[in-house]
Length: 113
Length: 114
Image (tube, rainbow over the protein chains, first blue to last red):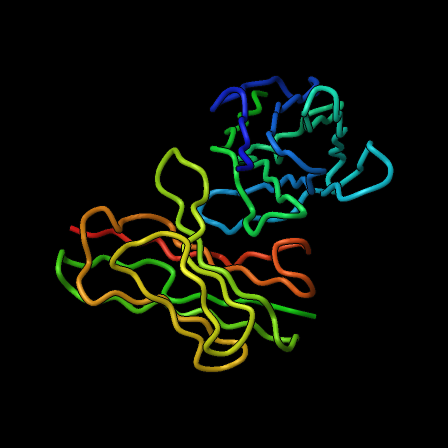
């Protein structure tokens, strides 16, 4: 069965600093991978997704993620954090042969001024 | 463009009372529809998904049920709420192949069962 592990339930960075949100997945077949962002009391918004092709995926708001098959990872990065990036971030995986989108537990990002 | 609505936005209900949450999608036809629950400090748990009218799959056994009386309407119900039903309920839709294409989420309903 597919599973997703997000390392760290909370992350605090300074404004302008690098943002790195870690996601590791398990899947016995090539996965489809997603990152979603959730602002307080709102639904989830897609940041980016990987299905096939280029392993470095660029998303909205300056975020990008790299699919590394050998490491079973799909970490999310942004070179310079903004205050508006404060939110909860969810990694999700869907196996081509599975029938569910499995979400990680989420990482709450705090941006300090 | 497509939009997804959920109501109510917040709800406080006593234990044992019934529940009805509604989700509607505009601007698309024959969408795949999903109900998720998000408990505090936890990820999203898929409750139900539907690929068409009256075609609903349940992911977890519980006292909740779902119905899809119209193409773009998805309803989450319960006859008797439990304390453990408290949480943030999210409806989502996608087009194309279920679980492969991007899911678009509604604003959510925060349910508190007292």
